[in-house]
Length: 170
Image (cartoon, rainbow, N blue to C red; front, side, top):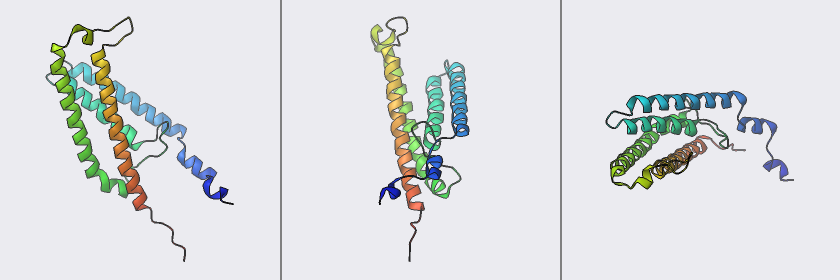
């Protein structure tokens, strides 16, 4: 009797799944972000704070993509034109600015400490290995980014739930 309440209709499944067009659009954005990040690291690598600025550019793009678009495993998207999203934009920007500041400060500190580290931290082990210092920076950056995306998507999901008015039967 209650199975019909729990089962999704074909329309709901289609609405939740990622379409080919959406997937191609997200992949194109990711490729554009990767190319832009590569250019930023090359162009800014020798400048003071250049690595940090290039990292922030990459970080900003990645957080934007994974916060607002449907991707594999994330079947909800948030349009910037929706009123509940626009109401949350100042809050989201403040939170994002705090995360950007944290990433910038942590990376600046890590790069200043790099000169006092032993060679083991800075050299790769094996032919395809990555230096532990770089690997650690990547893991910490990804953990910070994932936590921000989860936090922002939680705020948007709550705002969306509040904006949907329940149907009252009289």
